[in-house]
Length: 90
Image 1 (cartoon, rainbow, N blue to C red):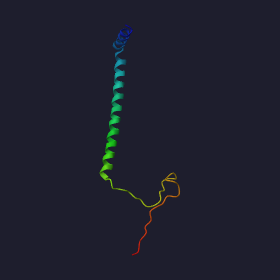
Image 2: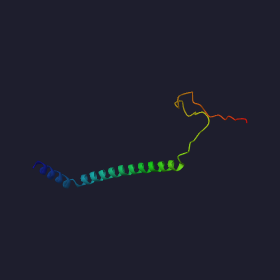
Image 3: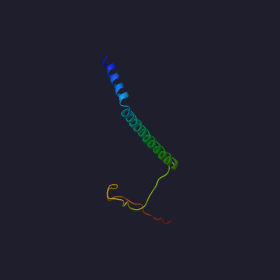
Image 4: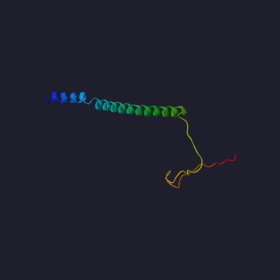
């Protein structure tokens, strides 16, 4: 019986406060729609990146000669080896 009374009171509050009910529903709808949109954008971006990387192939490696001078916190400090050109004479 108590549940029935609570439902009657809730329904009466909804009917008497139509503007508040409308604004609450609008806020919930916009909130849920924005979460769904953000998840869809994130999944689409992830799939796009995955496709781009897969298109490069599995046997690709990038080698850049020279020291890394983008900041002090790279690798293990000063013992980073760089590529050098060594010409072998026949």
